[in-house]
Image 1: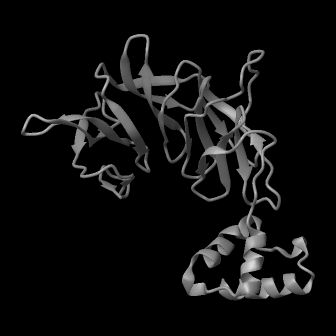
Image 2 (image 1 turned 120 degrees about the vertical axis):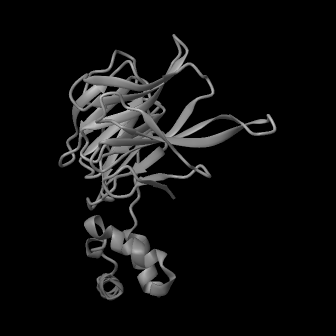
Length: 274
């Protein structure tokens, strides 16, 4: 890797720093990032200039990029910009923003403004986004997103997607009846599935939702008001894991010591927090 960058930097420099010689863009951008970010590689001045030139600059016609989310394979970057949710193919030589708009918005309405949450499937082929007009699930394919599911009635603030992209889970607050739910959808059009939990406790909040690799189990990181032995109340973190294949899923509590990312260990119901 280090030798490849060294040779590429020499050829780029000798070619009057021709942009077409920046071979560590696109699919090889991760190699450039590794060499640039690890002290043991110690790039010299010419190599540093080459690596800086390989870095991608993503632009929008208006607004700034917020809430960025990188796909698991490192190819796609999704984020909110202006009045829409955008997708970039980082393996392209010159990534251009792709709008995640596969429906007709009402006159004067934003496309997917105010993006609240984004989640990718493990194979990076499916993306779920939540904005002011509800939940949308898109199949990315080769960069031409096709919407394969939606729920305009729900606007989750936490979102998770199964590894194969077949299920999405979100934390939904229903202002009308003052309840909060963890809701699960399939990725077929308008295929709302069920509410796994419904709570009237306004202090109940879900921070993270993670599916097991076989999408049988769902783990959640919960923040809530907790009373200690002295009777004092504080905001603490708890967790639970659910067997979605059970006829009547019941939660198994998770022993969490801090607010930390969750990850499944193998296919079974074992979870670690990082």
